[in-house]
Picture 1 (cartoon, one colour):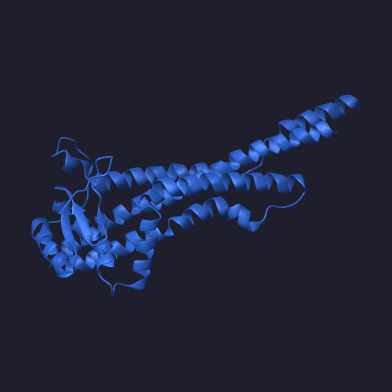
Picture 2 (tube, helix red, strand yellow; picture 1 turned 45 degrees about the vertical axis):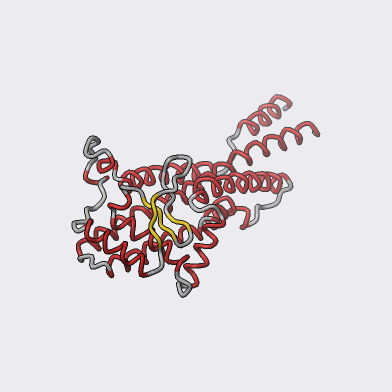
Length: 274
């Protein structure tokens, strides 16, 4: 009987920890990164930047705007009417240009040649320059800027996801050790919190594109160019949406690791007490 008890105890210790957060988190990170990479490659137009030196498959090329030069000129005129200034630079530490700040849109030589990108940035600046701009758009843009702009997706949200995931994992393990069930909020926190944090950014990006499309219409864009711009801006928005999925996945993975380590520690302590 003693041997059977020892065998049973060893078997229970070797049983895998049942927690789906690790697999769910990994799936979100994998799918999010894959989609983000494809959308980013399509949005930045590697072939255009390299002047054709890098050949990209058609699927990863942005949709062509036929009257691009004409539209960029008209957009710059629309910007002046709306009280928006256009300037070159300033450049961030990583060498990429800052898109906009307050009532100024900053462009580099490449951005100034892309009508849809310029229209999108004008859409952002619209909510700073125009006092009569929609309340939702203004509020979202203010929150977005205060929370760090694009850093919200690439720094703030991932760090928050890790912190929330770790706390939730510890909470779950301790609850189970007491024979209690994990609460509903704790279950979804690692996914909900990092996604909620980037909400102002997602709203701002979508509304900037929506306003940008209106700028393009006023600039006299054809139906074909409007369609191409809409698709290009949707692809750009996807880069932000997919990062939200990646960050939620990071939260799930963090929770799984934290839960596993805490449970192992609690089980070990429980074993010593026996």
